[in-house]
Image 1 (cartoon, rainbow, N blue to C red):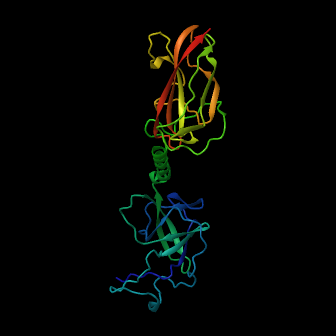
Image 2: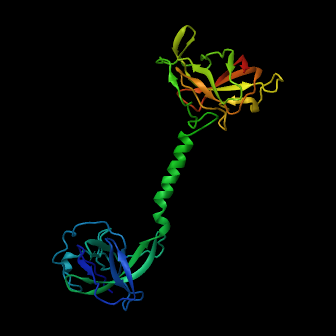
Length: 314
């Protein structure tokens, strides 16, 4: 049996003036009557979605069905008309949009579900056909969200916290700049810290006047430059007087799951701190511990330094 296709694809339109079993919704918010089991087997299929486009060119003056110009239609060895790859059988107009109506229907489609059939007619000879409507499956519509979520997770994994000091580390509130920093000395083995001095606090108060500053510069092998670290100062008080400092005796800026508390930048300081527990009146041994990360890469630990001092609470 000879199989004819036309080149270029002719125009057709959706018929919307008949009573169907159901309705189908096409692109452009077009709702048309549809049938589940048409009287004729559907000859073509269309996608419910179609991008906006102008009327396809070269579709005017197409011959009527069954009356092609044999000389204008290329044929293969079996006498079947050859259609260029990707060329639709019809350009089907529904509302203001044109759908590509094609004959080849892959029965193994996984991205689309089969809907009902809409009635169509060719513009040149009003020949009636039925077109099967294919809809994207709902899970396909969620793919962009899934991809976005995956990219977010990857960005957090590669750009977020890694190791014990990641970009999740925050900085202390109320920082004050103590001067511009110069070019860093490129070594994490040498950094400078301000040593803590003996201090007096108010008894049973969470707010204390206490200065913590990280110098803007340091000197290494005769070269002076910017302090290469951001550092987290934690204050410990020997509350039980046993001469040791445990985690429960960290009264300010305790390390979290990252192994650090909040950081100070080089050349910054705070002069008032907010304790996480009250300290009763008395004389105590205290210690300030500076835990550091390389300022240019918070994923690289830069060691720690500690300073002991005497605390009077009255």
